[in-house]
Image 1 (cartoon, rainbow, N blue to C red):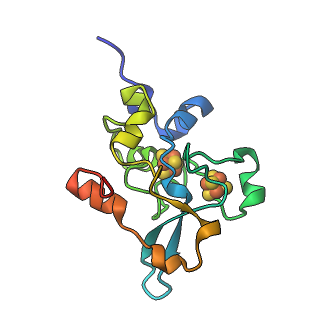
Image 2: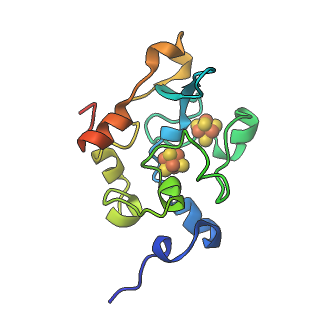
Length: 156
Ligand code: SF4
Ligand code: SF4
């Protein structure tokens, strides 16, 4: 019998830096802009990506300098991942912080990043750069929520 994988046996705080980084599925969702209703605190997701998100790979194009480039770019930690309301429900950090596990399409389970796209989780082909957008409110989207509820890609 093969041993249980590290994400089922360790807490987020116990993971090595390599293990922690491998949890990111490179979906790119956390690099989309969100709008917050000042009255209710409700958060709406848009399909508008940070300038530094590579829309082809869904990775940060200047990860080492992200805090300098985008001062409000949030560093995920074992302490804050369970508290960030805008993290997508599919994010591995959020899932594990809530005692859930990884889905079939996660690269650590499937063995490849392409399954993130196949499952409709990745923003590839679904997002546009903020440099092309005039009014963020025109770009509010619920595609991830719709996808999770229907079990299929809302764009597909
Ligand atoms: S939402 Fe989570 S899994 Fe997706 S890119 Fe951001 S940190 Fe990685
Ligand atoms: S700076 Fe990089 S990591 Fe931060 S939001 Fe932009 S693309 Fe994402």
